[in-house]
Image 1 (cartoon, rainbow, N blue to C red):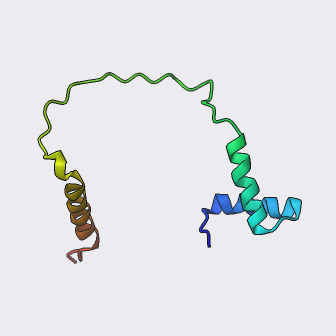
Image 2: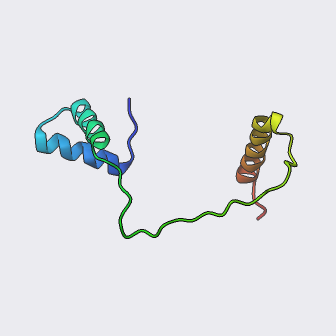
Length: 86
């Protein structure tokens, strides 16, 4: 089973109708075609410059960063699903 975004589904459906392909064959063809096309940066895009800056010593114990991230995600979820005052 595959879940596709609507734009990806449209590409697969178009390949199916244009070439008489099954869903699986059209999906494989779309994936192969995307790998064959080189990814380029538009020539009219401005160059990006980033200045590195010292951020100082860490204020968080990074040995437990994943646990901290989980705690932050939990706090965010609690805020999201908490009943709002009427």
